[in-house]
Image 1 (cartoon, one colour):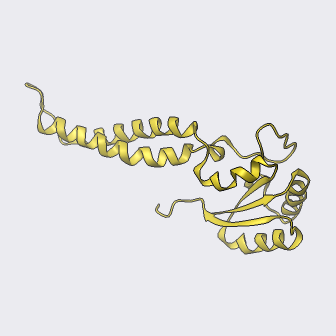
Image 2: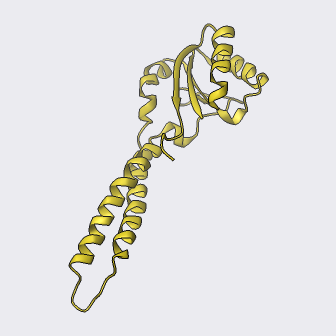
Image 3: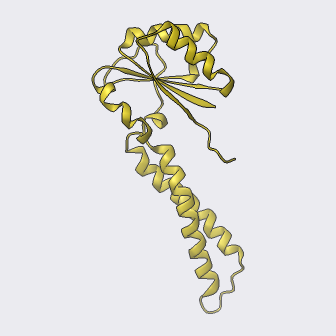
Length: 169
């Protein structure tokens, strides 16, 4: 999946683009609109909380850091057990799993309170009244939809494409 970004000058333009995309068989759940706080988007599909905040990025950072820290604690416990306690090497794996879960949770809590760092470049335009449209599409439809929006809506400012799925499985 790929995510397309378009800045639209106002809500009327956003509604016209949405109508054209729905007629082109782009599902409403793949359209995400973001406007200045307090703006009534009406029937437009608003961006989710996870898309507005750094929740996902926080989790992506917290998981590996927590897993490494947990594995190190597990290794330390394995190599220097308390008297009378015998630990198996599986304690390192359990430490990594527990640390990864804890790291993901803590970093997500931090990320949820911060605006999405990927959308930082759009902040000034959104605050001045523009509407950001994010469209999630399979790779095969990207050029078609970009051509549709750029051809029918010259007021829409195309801000490119980025992958929304991680590069690794």
